[in-house]
Length: 137
Image 1 (cartoon, rainbow, N blue to C red):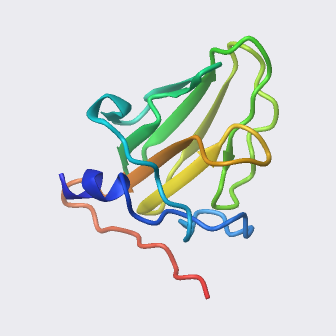
Image 2: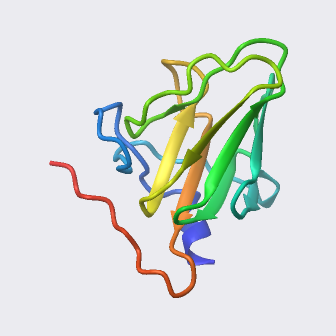
């Protein structure tokens, strides 16, 4: 799948710019193995563990809902690097959901600062017109 190949090395974001729903530039997804990647549909849950998110890389459709569930022993938060409002503290067993309404690759981290720990690539569903991100200047 062309989109999946791109996700393993295409540019996916800039540092927080406060531009909700826009993919960002200058953050590159790390190389992934097939074990790191899972194709998903609406409602799939990402498990946030002490070792990081499982899976680290997702491919979903435009308008799909992604749920992050805290399966670690302490509080954690999800910070999408596109400027979307962060989740706030998610207690153990708690969840955070987000609907992606823009086609693109989105990085996230599980602390306010630090490197991205996971990536979500949003593709249009078959027959669906893509909603491209507005280019940033």
